[in-house]
Every structure is written in structure tokens, then in C-alpha cells.
Image (cartoon, rainbow, N blue to C red; front, side, top):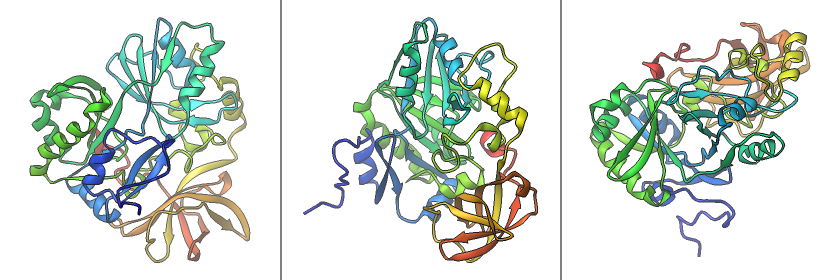
Amino acid sequence: MTQADDFGFGTQIRKSPYFDATVRWGAKGFSVYNHMYIPRDFGNPEQNFWNLVNDAILCDVAVERQVEITGPDAARFVQMLTPRDLTKMAVGQCKYILITNADGGILNDPILLRLAENHFWISLADSDILLWAQGVAVHSGMDVTIGEPDVSPLQLQGPKSGEIMRALFGDDIMDLKYYWLREVNLDGMPLIVSRTGWSSELGYEIYLRDGSMGDALWERIMAAGLPFGLKPGHTSSIRRIEGGMLSYHADADIHTNPFELGFDRLVNLDMEAEFIGKAALRRIKAEGVARQQVGLIIDCDPFSGPNTTFWAINKGGETIGKVTSAVYSPRLERNIALAMVAVEHATLGTEVEVVTKSGPARATVVERPFYDPKKQIAAA
């Protein structure tokens, strides 16, 4: 007989150092991300959303595997992987980057952390960039070492996360700026802490550098957070869609380029450095894109959960695009979605038809993000 906590995809799906703790604290279901289990269900996803936006949640995101790049040519090599200009990236800084292939397609949209002059971590979304980076290095002629370190992140997110961090690490941690990192130690546990996260709320990521201490770290943070209303949780589809944040494989993939997503700021075609995809992205920019990401408000009964398939978008009897991420926002009291449509239909106010799982519904193209468009909450 299978036990309730025996989530069994087999040994080829790795468990995080926090796996047993999340089951103890109520994880009911898991998905697979970067060949690892990730908790996706602690009960009611709407309650998880309110816990996040009103108080704080702790999420096991050890699936954000790190690609560690060190060596004399580390900085030059990392620049070759991304079209974002890294020349002014300081030690201790984090940056949201895109990793592109030779056709300008997006392979991943990770956070890059610079721990030292020649020491970087690429904190991954869901795709095998370790293998890509090692392959690129083979004929690069650069002196780099590339591997996966024993590093497992947690996300502590929500408006009370700063106070919980103060309770854990003292007043000094409050000086940590948005998209910067710091090396710290907690009860002998070696950590990197950054002011980042996948929530659009105030938040921190806590990178444990010794997986054997995972259970102890989880319990230590939960104990410190209980007086502030901290709950175990999972990354919120509702909040990340409100914030217009991408989910790789859903809103972007190898066939999506940065300009379709409005990510021009993450591409510098004028810098001297060569990077993979530079020629293709120059051509795409010169020719213009044929499709573009938009926000949609969909007029129908509240969705019971996120979409699990791409929904067709029609206009004038023709299919003009697809809904990539859709959810009901209890705060906005609307069905909201990220979508990719033909560029001639991407104008704000355009009305289209979306074929939802319950049938056709009217939708309107709107600005995204849907909430806190200037990211003032996370950056405050």
C-alpha cells in the first residue's frame, strides 16, 4: 500500500533537502521542475495567495538549480551566454537575464548572481542550462570550470518577510538592497541571501550551501516566522501572473525571442562583447516581430485554477494567438492572462475571443503587469 507521503516518480526524480519538511508541513501535491520535485499544493491556492500578499510564505524552490561558473575567464564566458550587458555588474549584485541560442530563442530566464570577481551562479528556471553551458565551454577556448554546486534555495516572500529576516539575521540584513546578495551564517548553516524572488512581493531567497542541513534550516525559519504569520506555501500562479512574471515553457520557450516579450532592455546589440544569438537578434530587431505578448482580461465565470493547456485566441474567425498563462485573481476579481498574439492585434483595447476549457469567452487586450506595474512593492 502506498503511503500518503510517498510521492513516487522513481529515483530519477530528485528530492530537495526540504522535501521531508514540506510533507510534514502539509504539502499535498508535487510537480516536476529541473528533474526535481517541487511542492505545488498546500491546500487552497487562493489562501496561499492571501498568505503571500498579507503576511509571508516559505517556499521550497531547491528546483532552482545553480550553474556555477568559476575560473579566470568566468566573466567573459557568462557574457557570451546572455544578450544583457554585464559590464557594470558588481560583485554582490544579481541580475535577471535571458540565455539565448544562435537563433535568438530563449533557453532560460534565470537570475545571475556574482559572488566574486570570477565566481557566478546562474539560478535556473526549468531547463538544462548546465549541459548547455558545459557544451558551449568545450570549444570556447576559455579557462572556466562549470558544475552544479550543493546549493538549494528557499524563497521567503511577502510583506512580513523583512521582519522575519531581521528576527533571523539581525538589523544589518535590512540594508540589503533589491537585487543584491550577501553571504551569511545562521546557526552554523552557510547561506547566501538575496533580495529576489518569484512573487512580485517584498521577498528574499535563501541559498543553503549544505544540503544535509535542509531540514534544520526549514524548521529554523518557520519557528522565527510563526509570530509574523509565516505559512508554508508554494510559488503563487495568481501573484506571478498579476505581476506579469514569466513561467518558462509556458510564456516563453526556445521558439520565443526577447523582443516578442518586450524585453528590449535585456538585450544590448551595441556592446563590443560577442554573445550567442547576437546576429539573429540584430536581424529580428531590424525586421520587427510578428507576434507580441499582451495581457488579457477574460470575461467569464471565475476560473477554478490556472490553465493546463494553451487556449486559442480568435479574431474574425481566425486564430491569432494563444493564452499562455491564465488565472482568476481574487484581489482584482477578474480572470487575467498572459497571451501571445499576432502583432497587428496587440493594441490595447482590442477585443478577441478566447476558447477556454468551458467554451468561448470575450477578452480584451490590456496593460501588463495587472498589479503594481512599477514593481514598487518588491523594490521598496
